[in-house]
Amino acid sequence: MNRSRLRGAAYGAAAAGLLALAALPFDASATDAAGATGKDKGAAAAPAAGSAEGAADDGDTAAERFGWGKPVPEGTDEFDYGSADKPEPPDTAKWELPGGPGECGEGHDGNGRRCTDNSQVVGGKLRQLGAENGDSGWMASKFGQRYGRWEARVRSEATGEDNGRTYHPLLILWPDSNRWPQDGEYDFLENTAPGEKCAKAFIHYPHDPNAEVQQEPAESCGVDLTEWHNVAVEWTPDHVKGFVDGKEWFSFSGGENDVRDCIQCAPSMHQTIQLDNFFGEGMQTAAYEVDWTRAYSIDGVSEPAARS
Image 1 (cartoon, one colour):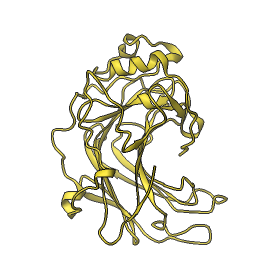
Image 2 (cartoon, rainbow, N blue to C red):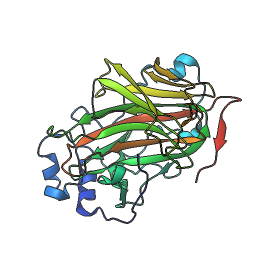
Image 3 (spheres, rainbow, N blue to C red):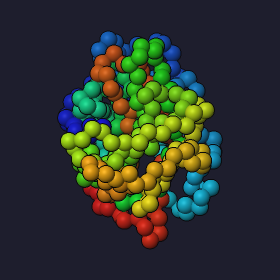
Image 4 (cartoon, rainbow, N blue to C red):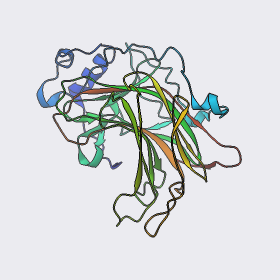
């Protein structure tokens, strides 16, 4: 993952198209209807199953099943603002964005751009859009802590013709230090395409930057990610565990050696929500939606970290 950014790139007419499309069900002509064509297509329409509201209920959560208590307000967003007719950017008191309205930063590993206007709250849910031209959404929580729990209700869908150039929907714990790979990275949801039938995760060890990537993969199949599911991670001094709909699907601990620290030994982290581009331009359009995201502290264990 690459969090570097190039601020100030104008989004222009494509940004207006994005806002206009926020409430539309997807069809093959929807992007053209917004007035963007060719390389200027900077918007992707919403999934056909989408609506102006979030999920009808919370579903099965790890927080309820395991008694995680009340979420930390600073690290929680119910996305209960904005509307289909008047989308709003994510709350900047809680989220770092690529810039102001119409601004973009560099995309993952230099592929495409991460644009503020590609993350919008449309009333009851966050919607990130991945465009054909490679522009997509990214946001980082301003709440950091060492050890804790995070859970989000998500779904994703490819909205364009399959060309093999798919976006990656992710939920990440990223080090507050921004030092990678020395301080680790916990991708507690990372799929190589939207709406896959298996949830995937990649939990990175804090490790020597001169070593090959040190990580543990996980997979839970039978999970239709075009539908709402709750994805959670628990990070303690003893382990990193993942949950889907309240059921544990991975647990990692230890594993230190001469090039890496133990997998749970990262310093303080914060959550990111992102739709990553691994190819550049000519992408298959996609939508990634988050009904809510909640952070929890563990009494006597979590160590809060100040982030600006």
